[in-house]
Image (cartoon, rainbow, N blue to C red):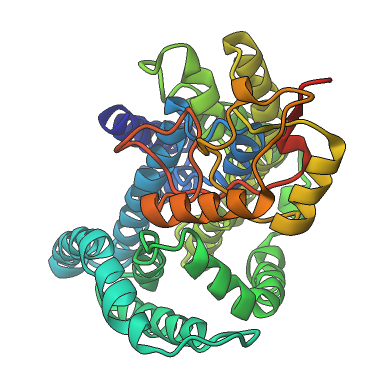
Length: 407
């Protein structure tokens, strides 16, 4: 799915960029910088909600789920490049800022991607963390070391890319650098555990002190801004993303609607363009209305389209079967209600365990789960996992993961 997903990302970036720019020109504004600013604000995609729904439906490992992840990743890179180019156009033309720095930044991102796969997993898993003594503290010394490494890399990368145009490149690359560590999502859990309170408040302050305070309420609530914003929202903002995957077969609209979502980055581009006098208050209000359409309607429509697609294709996840409610309770009690497990366990074969037959000892089952998790390093395996196409994700154990034979 890689090449096709990259093509989806390219179409998903170019179509709203072009359509938004042209419609802004049709509204009587100049192409530079007004049209390009609006088009750039409409280009980024946020698939956070889409990925959560895919995970809940347990189809993240399907080809269309992997296509959404890949397309969103590439879309983020393209949007960051557009962001850098857009704000390098302010003032007189500067060859270094407009052309050379983005090229250097792209090359730097390519090198960092290779390091994220080849260097950092080996450096952290084999060289650094094994030298830190293990302990049973609430926040272990290894987690502390890992957090220091993440923070240091964030500061280094963000500083380097700041001189290339925007620190956001560095933030993106730094987070990507820890995606391939042996313990799936552990780096993410360590980061969230240490920063979640600060992040939750900083997000509120960010929106209230930047985007929210900068919105011209009088212009935003005018009928003209609403009508133009609705046209911009339905067309360049939503429809251009929905139609970005025409070559993806019957999953084209699922992938398209997954790409419709927008988040803080899109609003930030619009706000920064307004602050730099690249767009006026009227155009800023139109862009806000357009982004609101995508933000509000995308999650609900994607859920509906996804559910219909799953029902039409009869997707289902293979899960362990147990013989009694007591077995369920024992598994939940011993393994933990949210213990990450490997679903591909030879000791638990659905065809071999029905009511009245015995199941393996729970301690043996736990050892088998841990052994397979250590061996394959992939966290969770289902019949949807394919070598070379798997996305590292965790599936948590709860009662809905079991299928009773007597049900």
